[in-house]
Structures are given as structure tokens and as C-alpha cells.
Image 1 (cartoon, one colour):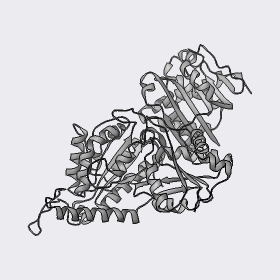
Image 2 (cartoon, each protein chain N blue to C red; image 1 turned 30 degrees about the horizontal axis):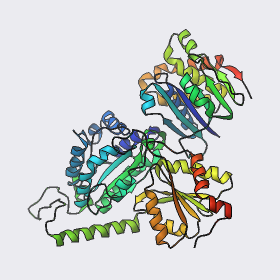
Image 3 (cartoon, each protein chain N blue to C red; image 1 turned 90 degrees about the horizontal axis):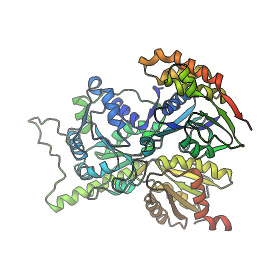
Image 4 (cartoon, each protein chain N blue to C red; image 1 turned 30 degrees about the vertical axis):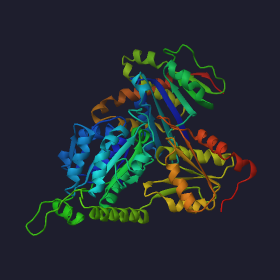
Length: 183
Length: 373
């Protein structure tokens, strides 16, 4: 199994930390992982993205031009990465702020209203965990136990009291993700 | 098995320094390696192992602090990124001239000048051929994973002390910023005063007892004859490195008709390019130099006798390609050597590499592979 993915959105949406939790969960399941962030001018200008690879075998290139899965959280990223999903791959997006929804017909498209749900939950900070829950529903590549362990590993101990809230947000994401188009 | 963590290359460098018993780090922040000192400052190793961590007022100050501390026979290091290493060049030449062991780290970014903060490999010449003035060499290690960022700290110190010579880890922004699974080393205590004396013999300035002559650490020798002897000894040391400490990794080279040669991040991209090329039916292998000096000439000479061509893939305009050409020339082989690179902070993609290979070796691919002799 190899999952090559990109998570792309604005700085502050929790893009990098979502990738980190996924990578740690992969380690808990004894996989090889890489997490490669954008760290340059684009990050300083507002958009942020991270390439995460989880694999059973040694990972070669940490830099990719095509992805099995793209999680897209703003219009700029949609413009850039919709075309980079491999045919038959997965595109998951939050419609908030998306003016031009994805149009490809050769990929699987899912939508999650995570911004809205996080406001309803009274905590916009759990936005990324709602998206992460939706992702794991659509691409169940890791066991829920290991994801919980990965979450604990990637949070400093002083935040461990927030784990139940994060798990609740992930459950919410599982429930509200919608299928837009399936190949 | 050691502790498993998910860490950035830069963070792991700091952690490995603490764990291998490093005595002192002197540095000045610069993107994309600022996490090295940040991590050290958060870890506060001075409370744990007594290791000194100091932010100097400039790169020039930090390399001269390294010079002073290395003269005492202790394990000391600095890290920076390309423009910062240029500022240190004079000090590095002095360290090499005075035969002082230390660890230098360059997390390269694109140049020339202030350039960009994105990853690059355009400091190959600076690291391998000099950078500073005079006939000197650094031991240059090129990590291509976060695990190797960890492993090469200890290895770098080991080689630096074996040869009384500065060792450099030549990484790039991608390896520094990327997080991967890493197995951390167990803690080694810092050397005691007795161990410093025992490991270094009698050259270090460890405090002069009445029983011996004073130790002088200098690169200055006013008499030309003496200076030539010094140079001859340095060259003998560099030849010994070439005999004993060449490191490389050969991936699928046994049946390869074409060999990609790449180090660091470019080698990771090329590993994928080999997979892509093999799927297309092209017999391609990868030679990954791990030590850039001493350069793995011997294996290139051996491969040159059975391969049609080498493609040097670098994140630069083509620097290592010159060393490959020299090795192939030495082998008396007619294997062709070409280069493919991206510059200015751009990492080539695996597909680009395969396309470059098909383009540059189109003759051999169309008319059958011309075996070299």
C-alpha cells in the first residue's frame, strides 16, 4: 500500500498539523512516512500545503506531481491541484470559499462542509479534524486505533485533554462527508 | 531499537548532536535551517549534558568560536545555509589548515547571492573543491533522508576526529524541512577531560603541564619549506580518506545500461525515476554518492566499463558531473556523461528525469545501446 497525497489550503486551517497527525498514525501502523511542507514565499503569502506519503515500503521521492488523494481547502489550491489528482484518485474539498467546484469526471469527488460544522460545534479550531475524519471515511488506509495513537503522539501532553474533542470532530467528519461523483 | 519519532531533518540534527555527546554549538539563524538552533534552545541541553549552545553575532563570529573550541579537542559544530557558509569560508580554510576536527552543516538554498530559501545543491563545488582558499579538503557527507541527518552527525564527528579535519554535512532545504520516521541514537556521554586527552593524543590545548612543550594551534608557517611539508602531509591525509572512507549506495546498477548519479534530495527523486524507467523497460540504475569527498571514483570506473552512459542529476547547473567525467576518463571508457538539473530552488520531478534521460541518450536508445569498453 502506498498513499501519496497533498493537503492544501490557507495557513491557519491546520493543514500542516493534519498532515502530521496522519504521518504519526502511519508510524503507529509501522508504515514508512514522509511529510514535506511548502515553506517558502507561498506559505508567507498565505497558502500552505503539505505532501504526505504513507507506504509499506521505503519511500523514494518526497516530491510528487500526481497524487492519489488531494484534500483541498481553498480556491487557489483547487486551481492548482484538481488537475494533479491521478485518474481514479480522490478529491475531498470543503465548499466554503470555493467559487469553481471541481469538474473532472475521471476522479472520485467528495465534499465536506467542515467550516460550517466546526462553527456549529462551537469551535472553529477543530475544522481540520472534521476534514481528517471525512478523509479516513473515504480512504480507510489506517486503523482507528492507530489514528488515535497518532493523534496522541503528535499533540504535546498539555493538550491531551483535547483528544476527546478531536475524536468527536473526526466522528462528525465521518458522518457529514458527501459523495459528489464516483468513478 | 532506539526511540522512533517523526521529526524534521533540522530538528533531528539538533537532537543527534545532544545525543552524541557534542560539547558545543555556535551558530547564527538562517532559513531553511533555523530549526536547528530553535530545537537546541528548546531542549536546553546545557541543563542535561552541559553542552554549550550559543547564538553568535554573525556567521563569521560563530565559525571562529568553532575554531577556538575545536582547538581544545572537544566536539563542536555549527550549521548554516548557503550565504552563511560563504561568510564562514575563511574560517573553514583556517580550520582545515590548522587541522582541527569539527562538524559543519550546510542546509543548502538556491543561489547565487541571497538567492532563494528553497532547496538547492549548487554549493557542491564550494563544499567539495574548496570555498575557502588554499589546497584543502573537507570530508563531505550528503544525507538523503531524515534518518541519515541523524546518523551523519555521529559519523561526521567520528571522521573529523579520525583525520583531524573538518567534516561537513551537505544537506538541502528539502531534507531540512521534511519530516520522516527516524530512529534516534542512544545517548553517549560527553567526553571527560581524560577522554579528550586520550582521543586526541597530544595536539589539543588542554592545559599545559610543566612536563611538555606548549601546543600551538595555527595555520601560519612563515618558512615555505615548512609550509610545503604541511601541505604534503595534508595531501597524504586526503589520499588516506580516499582509500578508507568512500561511501556510496548502488541501486539496481548490476544490469543497468544507463546510470543516474545523484545525491541528497535529487537521489530520492532519482530512485522514483528508476522505478518509472524500469516500468517503461529501460534498464536504469542509480548510484548515490554518500561521501562527496572522498568521491566514489572507483565504483564509477567499474560501472563505466559496462554502462553506456551516466546522467548526473543535480539541483544545480551541473557540478558533480565534472567529477563523474574525470572518473570515466580515468577508466579509459567511452561511456557518455551528461547532466540534467533544475536551479533556483526547484526540485526536479521523477518524470522530468526520465524524459531528460530519453532525450539526452536518444541515439543510444534508437540505435541500440553502444557498449562502452
